[in-house]
Length: 221
Image (cartoon, rainbow, N blue to C red; front, side):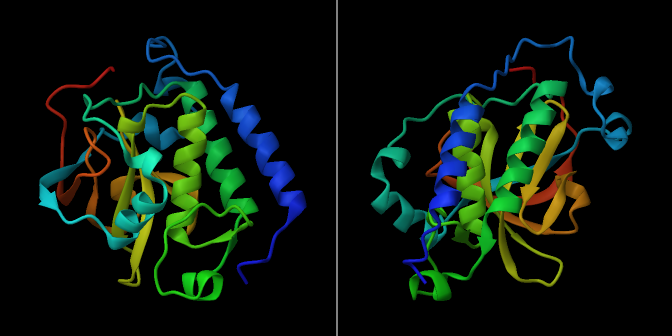
């Protein structure tokens, strides 16, 4: 299965990455607020954020990914940053989420790599949930989004199975990019139990997650 290469997909992917690199996002775009976004629920719901707990052990898939992609994981601690959720930012999220979900074909690691668990980029057009997340994260970062706001997150899905999603931290709450759901939802609307995710200050540090909390102040980084 590993040799199943789709040259047409590669060409499309390369073209889209070039396109996303041209996307612009300014954290100072305070005039383009959620009031102008298409999702009505964004205007009505109060921003909530998952309760961050103590440090947690990184998933073995992330540890092995970092051993293979050392340059991507060799980062220095930085200040947490939340996205100002402008109309353009929301449109970019939808564009990346839809493109990856519609382009990558689901395949288990056992079918794909012959092992139970492996995190990798779906460069041949096939992957499981972690691979979808890694590609979405990479595309958004290549388009200029801050790593500190794009957090790989481990959850229990509606069936109780382990699952990975991408949390996007914004001044309007936390939103989830998910290959099991076509719509981008607020984290507390997914029906998932949130287990742990990357720290905003260091992607190699993982933190446990708990109950929702209301923000003391609205971040505008």
